[in-house]
Length: 114
DNA sequence: TCGCTGACCATAC
DNA sequence: GGTATGGCCAGCG
Image (cartoon, rainbow, N blue to C red; front, side, top):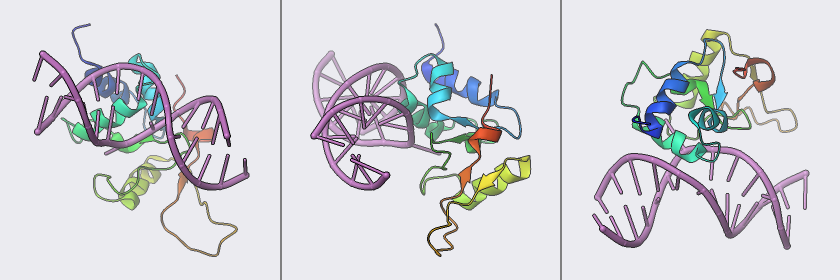
């Protein structure tokens, strides 16, 4: 293939429909290498086309968003996804800690299904 | 040109 | 059940 793995990653992420999210492992698998989940993140980190590539729709296997890096803050990512109709699940419960971080995406409802 | 690091995921102890 | 480490592959210095 002429295109690099990262190019494929961008193409896959770009295909994620609104209101849906995909995991790094899934994007990596669709890109052709299920083991390249790390490269997917690396490729998105490059983000050659901000605004075109919805990196905020890519989440961890657990449904949690990336830690501190983000493109403007984890809450920014949560707002974008929530605005698209993605359901979020507050981790809390046991602890009375009202941590804003830790919000998990409802992969069971909003995970992108081919 | 070679080596290291890295938005991860899975398995082992 | 939780924590720690390994392994895969690609881009960058």
